[in-house]
Length: 399
Image 1 (spheres, rainbow, N blue to C red):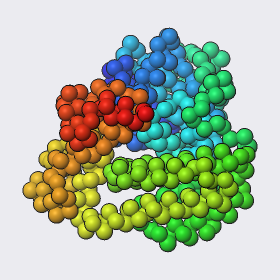
Image 2: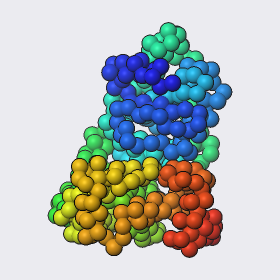
Image 3: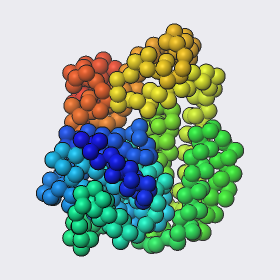
């Protein structure tokens, strides 16, 4: 069904540069363009999108807004849907995006949607809705009045629900110039962490502490703690994406966030940000020391991490690295005390354990997302590694 709309979607993107994701009612992420095409939305997020379209006529957009962000959902036909965006009208830090967005609950989805926003055009809500109506006209020769578009404002919904799990919105507006400076600071530190550059981190914080202390207003110690929590979270996710070291990265995150109540001042919070940045940098350096001598191993790990939601074979890895299967096995055995297949299973099960503990996904959904042949295969492998069934593991972490 995608081919039917492919040309119109590509023309629309060339004209507006608004990214889009096509998905169907079976909760399959079919096609994302043009950014992060190798990443897939979770079934949890797609299920929410399908639910919001269930009472809508075909081609009737649902415009969702949260803070300065917006996205549009449209049912193209009986099976095929499209999401335009998200985009924003002002620059955003991840802290701000995470704090105001209650629509997307999956943390991986939040991160790659935030990355999309960072690379997408900024426009007002009027400009965005006009663009969506133009797509309807281009694809279906239908006129959709902007006034008739269904608006789904999650800021108002937030005020009613007062979600205790997600951070409240900031009470003070921060100037765009300050936000831009803070974003640049965070990007610089994250890049230094990934590169194992301790000196770069120290130098960034010498300047960054003044930026944060002098320009951002925090209403309470809770706001300060939420800022640190978001900072620690994005550091953790970046390390997991870059190096597939899920357990080690999360252990650091958990150790620091367990001390949240002790963060009572801005200077204390900045020091904690500096310390966790250096600790993640040390984790990177230790991995580089052991593995960086083999670009083949590094590329293999990257392929495994990027394709963890698919069935991965050694032949696939060898093709990606442009070497023989035998070369992959030889290089891998030099740095690991397990086979390539055992390592792939280890990463899949670590991801599965993370999803069991930190999401509401069913075990069947987790099994499917990690490309196990069946739920029973996942359960058997999980128990062999963790000595608990998936249900026992989830119950253990709910106590």
